[in-house]
Structure formats: C-alpha cells, structure tokens
Amino acid sequence: MSVEAKQEPIIQVEHFKAAYDDQVILDQVNFEVYPGEVFAILGGSGCGKSTLLKHMIGLYKPAAGRILINGQDIAGVSGDERLKLLQKFGVMYQSGALFGSMTLLENIALPLEEFTNLPPEAIRLIAGMKLERVGLSGVAGRMPAELSGGMQKRGAIARAMALDPRILFLDELSAGLDPVTSAELDQLVLSLSKSLRITFVIVTHELPSIFTIADRVIMLDKQEKGIIAMGDPHELRDHSPDPRVKQFFTRQIVGNLAAPGTSG
Image (cartoon, rainbow, N blue to C red; front, side):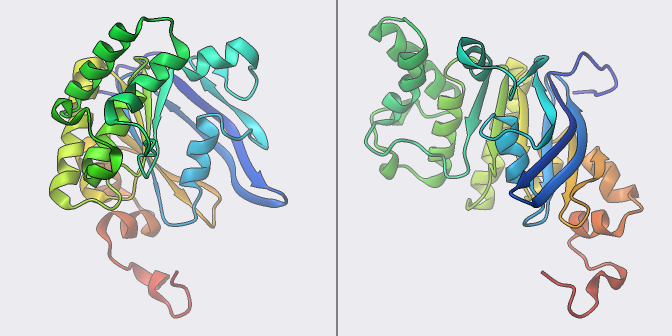
C-alpha cells in the first residue's frame, strides 16, 4: 500500500504511556496506522513491543494517553459498546493459543458461536471457509497437537478472521518457525492484505519478514522508552542516521555500541 494516499487512520496512538507500578516501560508514544497497511512494531528484547500490543488490543489501560480504534478509545468504552469494538479486530497470539481440547474447525467456530446468532450449519460453513482461506481445509478435523507450528499459526489467523474484522494483530508471526514456513506465512499475510484489505499490526523481529511484508514500521528502544525510528523499513535500513537503527537492520555492531559491558 502507498502510504502517500493517506486516508483517515484506523488506529491512533496518542501520547501513550505504559507503566507497571512505578516502572515506566513506554512514554509519549505517538503513531497512526492506516487502512490496508501492514504495520510492524520492532525493537530489541524488553523494549515494550508486547506491552504496546497488549494495550492496543485492550488487555491493559494506558497509564496516560489513549489508543483509538476506528475513532473509539479502547480503554474508554465499556459494556456492549466495548464488546462491539473488540469484534472489529482479531488477534493471533505468539503461541497460536488454539484450544487443545477442540478440533481446528471447532476452534475457528468458537467466536461465531459466542458472538453471532447463526445456526450451527452456517457456523460450520463459515469456519470451513476461513480454514480454506489460510490453506487448512484438509485438516479441519485435527486437534492442535496434531498440527505443525506453521499450521497452528495459520489456524490462529483463521480464528482471528472468524468475525470478518478489518484489523488483525499478530504477535511474533514467525517465531520458532523454519525459514520456508515463515516465508509461506509472509505470503499469506500479503495475500490477505491485498485481497481482503485487512489492516495488519505485527510484532516481529524477523528481518526477512519485515522487509517482505511491512509497509511501515516503528522501532522501539528500551533506553528511550519510546519510538526511535518510523517509516519504510528499507529506507530506515539504508538511510537512518541512528546507529541503533542501523545495528538492528544490518545485525552489525556499530561504533561504540560494541563497547565492553554494554551488551544485552
């Protein structure tokens, strides 16, 4: 997607602050995500990537600032209004988080059973269509434990798509997968983005995925407690003046970042 032809943002993060007790994790974080974008959240371990994601999907309330989904403050709505807002996006957790006591088809059907009044035959049909869309129609009756890691993540994406959300949040899409499987998941994301105009927000540190799928990225930094880079990942790799950004994208130690005692 060309970010030049900007529409109204589908997600707005404004003056966001995250803190646990007295420990500030992120502060004064500001960015927007536009419809149809594949937007990646990057950074080293402990920089707050997962913390930011958990706040964006409404698991935690910001210590300050706000996060708007389709113009609604996700921490400021409650009751039926909050339930409706939560149904506008789907989430794939890092482990896949499929229910082990249910078949793959039953996992995908669960959100439809919980949040719609559709008859059982319609739910099974829709769940089967979602599995077909992610290339898993042939294993609908299997249990999660019988599936490979890549299949589990495809199944988790199918479940996240069950209610036809316009936004999908993916936590560490490629974590623990071999390069071929990771590349296949990247192509699935690109296909869904192009054909269904789904907006993706993806937490990742996998460079091949970042350069393949991301329209824009933000890079978080633990010391800065915020964003140190934002934009096209190729542009940041090739032209960022910040040595921390260059080190992340090139996996090379830059300047005095290699000084003794500063690793980790």
